[in-house]
Length: 105
Image (cartoon, rainbow, N blue to C red):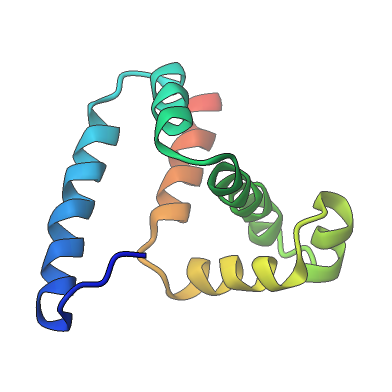
């Protein structure tokens, strides 16, 4: 991991994250996003993100953590982290799930 001066780290991260978010938002469909993610992420990073995403609907259905682990193979620790993010995070999981559900309906 790169080392940054603590005083500039937050601003750098914010600016760079905005650039990445803009790049993702510029993509037109799931195929383009998939290609971008394959180029951007390592296989381990993709696995971690897909693991997190696949437990979101199960958590929203209020399925117990242990059962989610048994169904998906995702660790109970990761399930707990995703659950905390759903409850206390920025709302991204909820927005994506809502739009995905609306799009499929």
